[in-house]
Amino acid sequence: MSTIMAFDFGSKSIGVAVGQTITGTASPLMGIKARDGIPNWDEIAALIKEWQPDKLVVGLPINMDGTDQHVTRAARKFANRLFGRFGIETLTQDERLTTVDARARLFEDGGYRALKKDQVDALAAALILESYFESQY
Image (tube, rainbow, N blue to C red):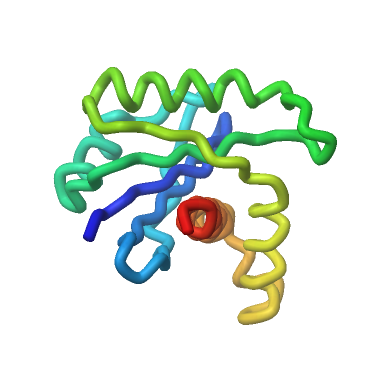
């Protein structure tokens, strides 16, 4: 069994989720504030210390036609920085429509009041991780 942590990268907020390979499921953890895509690295270090993931997965924002978005490069840079800081294998995963799906699920469960930015980002990270698990089977 491996623990994997996933990130939904954004320039102002980064969603975080964690999951296990044995179940292939993920749970949203939190949203971390970022400034121009730079998070509070101490917050990420504390999460990594707590959960001790075997791998990290970063959602890669890609257009529906498969081309890069303006933030795709920044997401790759964030993935490289995660690996550089923590030495944990870091992969990227296509994240097309995960934020849309996260918003729809949260709205269904609680209406507009459930659409808090950190909850949307954390759930999007969980969906990215579950997509990664599905791609492995």
